[in-house]
Image (cartoon, rainbow, N blue to C red):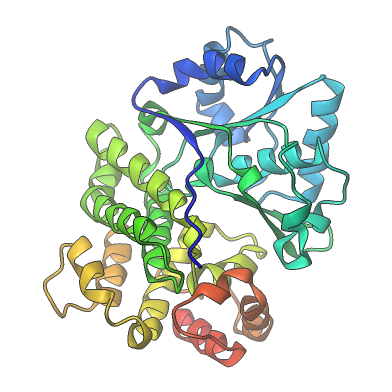
Length: 374
């Protein structure tokens, strides 16, 4: 049975952040919590969102989201949400503030602990439509979390929990390319490769969802035509528009499932490493591994990447990564070889491993990690 569902309300174009007050009013939100991070605040983007609300006192602000959101940060933001009498969340930033904002909206309306809502713990059925409204405003072009149905949080004991439910999809996404202008080249590259990994893995996923396949291929096409331009010139408005659309499309394909790249990057992320950079490093090895079990899909993937028939897709992704100046191996990121057994074990148990086109064992994951270490 193929489940196909698209549920988001999206305002997409330059200037769309100016619609925030009206969208919150339509949702009945009177006192939102702005969930963001220090980088967004220091870049002046938080102030622009506050201006769209009518001033700095219109919302409570939690700007301490860590690079990989933690349970401690979620609980601190939740305490502020309750203390300030908030009735909704506006998540501003990349995937981390959005994941934190979703988790706050969940715990504001559902009893804790957060771990009880993890997909591997059977928690999806416990997440109801009572969730506090979330408005998502991306400031990077990569995660697609503004339309995604998941949040990933590192628990106090060190392991990540992934909560997945249609109710976690933000009620509104305001996708304003203005907020991504001037994003540093390295962050543009890493988040852009994250978007590419979403399109690639969703397209190759074992689930049946032709609309998602079409969206995933369009995501790949936009990234391959615009990412290098966006990295060369942070003020290239057309490239920034295209990359934000690609990121949005990547998020729309999540319902089809992802694969081994993300199954590996989730436990590796517990080492404090950037998610998009990890995906860029892991993608070539996984593309080589999967080709024998998805050979019928690789011609369409090559076409989306503007490659000639028969071109090595994995080699193309490696070359793109190198041109963008991103690390070429897990070793460069500081991952020790001694971590391979535990990471492989965790990856095999990750829920996204289930939709990888090639069945993948612990031993397979260990080999993929070893290949990506070189």
